[in-house]
Length: 185
Image (cartoon, rainbow, N blue to C red; front, top):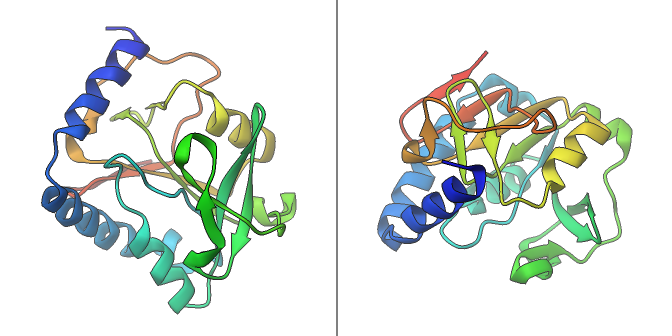
């Protein structure tokens, strides 16, 4: 199966999930993520705004805002993506492909990225921490350019396979968190 075929297959599987299943599994994933020392000790979280039945990130946002952590979300500009800090969910508005993006101008500095934890979306992952995204390469280019302190993929257990096709430019996660377990180095 090619990366594109796998991506399409996984998006269909995810789309078939019930809203209740998405909420339950997303909450379990958040509980596993928030138990990680790396996440708890991080001052800066780079997150994504979930859409189309991706693992929900609302709890991550609420946790960060309630616990004095800085949180930033990506904004796409052409072929590049940068993260911008937000202070409230109201700072997110529909942007690229209908995904919520920050309306603020407080871009995360390169220095801050180095100490951050990046929460990574994906259509599939494997047990050796490879990721198949959506095919645009935005996260791969961002990780290559800025080198976040830690990269944690979050996914439903069915999205984590023994092995997936990957290329040399595809960036790996340091950890992958599902509703069942935490995979990592």
